[in-house]
Length: 213
Image: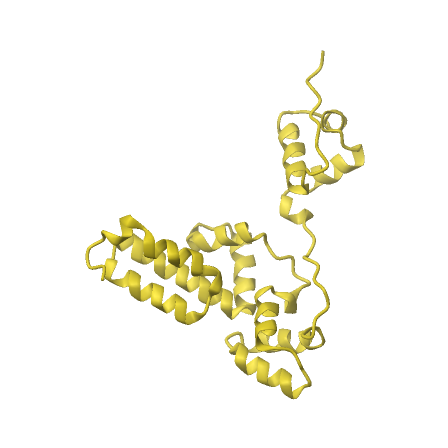
């Protein structure tokens, strides 16, 4: 009797299917046999087999139309020519062009990378992994992709810098700098890091470092 057929539920994600197909292929299983074991159409298996990395199967996220959309080209051009331009300056510029939305909406639009939505953005966990890895240790393709994202998103650049600074503090066990780093992050207004900051504040091991306030 042949190997037991692997049933894939309707909830199985594209990423899981890609891994399932490539796992069988790495074991020398043929395309037709993969199709039978996984319960997928042969053409579907072939499509997954042709893709060397699962992220290439991803489609850019779909968003509802919003008030910032008509000014997308302006934002893309401004960020390309002056990457460090503050969002407040962009907000003032858009207001003169007729923008009626809020500053918070513009912040969200830029943080999501919607002004460059023709790019395929990496999954959040993959982007986090890139940011947490020493640049010299990243493969060239990932380093190039990250550099492109940093070039068009100053907020992401600020986040990358803060991650680097925290890594240096941890590596050198500079307890006196932890609280200053936390204060710096809060002033930067990166709300996404607030749960992490709470963890730093409450971590018993970090509380015992010398020179902590």
